[in-house]
Length: 267
Image (cartoon, rainbow, N blue to C red; front, side):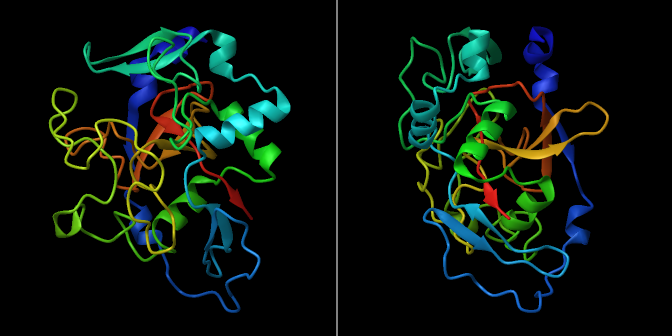
């Protein structure tokens, strides 16, 4: 298991799904009406005949929300069980196994504790599913995630349109400069950002592009690795480009990384 978790290429394989753009259809579903009882913190993702409507968390699940789950249930995350997790080290320019790195201390115990308003990270797929069951929600499939990010099929590259940086203003949190050597921090954050640090997309979703990768319920058939979407603060135009929502990454289900979190849906 440790060899799988330590594999740099297993963690960072990227596949472009170019067929997605052609598959999007924006015809409005007959009778698709906005519900009146949307739970707090969620938004309605309008569907079509091919894509049923659903509710989605407006933000990535925060450290504060995950802490409430742990306090109520006594849940122990996989990183805590393993005693270590993966952290990208900007000094060595590599992913390192850091002892006692977990959702409470994403960079390790010698670093700052996770802030309550940050997306929770260092959570595995099992951790995300356990939280989802407790919250009465589900992880989205890759298709559902893509439909939400595309504003119900309206866009093909970014949740806000065709331009990566519209009007010269960064709409999300990612790496500006040659990764991993220099981050110019043009988006205002040298690392992870609190949720809602940037304006929401038209459908009300925050940080659906950038900040942290997000687990989905979809697995790659050949390897059983899980699909993650959305990119993170470690993605740049020269590497990963995960903030373009057509990009895919696959990672082992037991991975806990300091740039990987999740958000949930209600179908």
